Amino acid sequence: MKLTNLNSELENNSKVEELINSLKGKKITILGHDNIDVDATLSGILMSQLLDFLKIENEFCIMQEVKEDDTYTIIKKLLKIDMKKWQKEEERNDRNLFLVDHYETIHKGKVIGCIDHHPTQQDKDYNFKYVRNSCATAYLIYEMMKQVGFPIQKEQVEMIVTAMMVDTVAFRSSKAIKEEIAQVKRLTREYKIDYDLLEKESLCLTPIDKLSIDQIISNGQKWYNYNGSKVGSSYLQLYGMPQENILQQWLNKLKEKRNQTASEMLVFIIFEIKSNITYEYQIMEDCIKELIHNGILSRGKDIMPLIECRYLHQKKLEQKLESFVKKLIEENKTIATMESCTGGQVASEITNIEGASAVLKESYVSYCNEAKIKFGVPEEIISKYTVYSAETAIAMANAVKNNAKSDIGIGITGQLGRIDPNNKGCTNNTAWYCIIQNNKEFVCKLYIMAELTRLEKKKIIIREITEEF
Image (cartoon, rainbow, N blue to C red; front, side, top):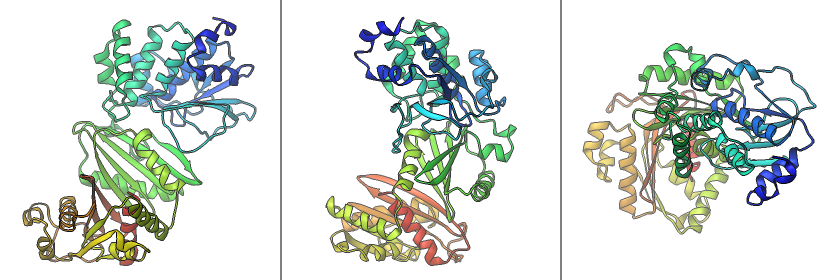
């Protein structure tokens, strides 16, 4: 199909017209993101095929060594495609770069366009941008292929379906979009593709028994620049969680890596397929923050946008607390706290802010077990889970919220340097907090650096609590 005959095809989609107008007359180098994965590879191939069809000169490049890892294996096994065909090492400043499955790059050249299924708050001044939530970037390219009458064959459908299934953990991830899944199932039937095989292979469980610890903590690694802050992320897909001592080895190694790479934060994610749970670990200079989410979340859709927001809107603790109190006043909401290891520090910091009397209803310092029970924490919760647990923090938040009849309840428990002879078994310098709002529980565990003072440790807990609002 000639470009001059495309007008009727493009009336319903300005993005395709914009793509053509921004790229025509130029030679395009298509790049997937660093540490290239299945979607980035297959999207790069599909984008190159689309531009060939549109008579736009292009090449797809993988600007890194292609290793025979899980990405290489699944593409080779399912699609008979050898990624090494596109491996290039030459860096050139005179290239026009088109990014697929990411929106910024470390490689040389002028970025003139990008297409990605991970929306970002950062605004890039490119000639062409198509960024929206989708199962995979490959699906966005498929949409454009349909709109220009690209002759889609079984090989393109297999690439599109594979990219979507791998990127959504066989459609178990929160990234999965029902309408797109329905379309994919229709395509697999139409082109007689083995859906069950793709579903099984696309779980892509990480072979941790075959990897070194450095490979484990760097699996699926991506780097981000959020307002000048360097943030890295990596992930594992496992069927069952490792033993606690193994997990601690990984986290200790990640602490070392954060220091070595001068990163503000490393985000380590474990998608645990067996229990359908996502474990998120934010490794910072002064603590490790553990978050446990029901369901298989999307790194690009659910996790990293919140990290991005944290660094794009950095404020000092006092500013965060002031914004927090003002927000509660504007929304006509109240708060109550039950604190143990922080000794009332959260309530104290709130009362430093003008207008706090309108939002803070009650605050209890329940430093011993008896006080927690007195204020409404069930004794059996402490007996069963210990006072230092997520369950106790949840019970504290519920109790104070109910007693105060507030909109928000916060419960905090943990050890910040003193070994408790009456409650043994807790790892020192560990704290849990729970925030209950709108009948939803948000629970977090913090591993805090031991060398800090008790006041510094309390400030970290307050800082992380305010990040949730």
